[in-house]
Image (cartoon, rainbow, N blue to C red; front, side):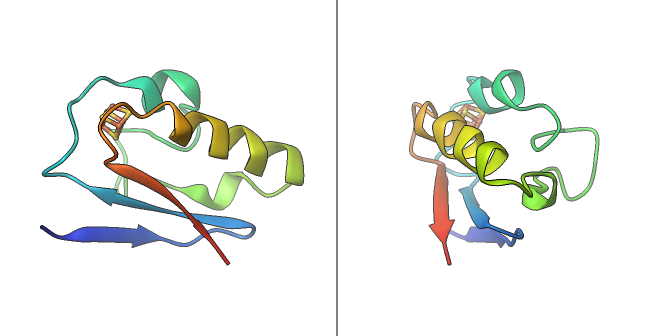
Length: 73
Ligand code: SF4
């Protein structure tokens, strides 16, 4: 279905809500990026250093459903 894209300073994130299994790996892993009480709920803007961008890649890699993808520039 529809994949939404969220751009960031180093990497972006895309998300497909139809695929998400609500396992909350993302929210637990990096709550400053994935915050369901905020709109938009994904903000890659805080991952503005190479270290934080790598942490974000790792958190996205733990998404069990494939709903989240890293969008390299
Ligand atoms: S980790 Fe993936 S499957 Fe789990 S809530 Fe986040 S996007 Fe959905």
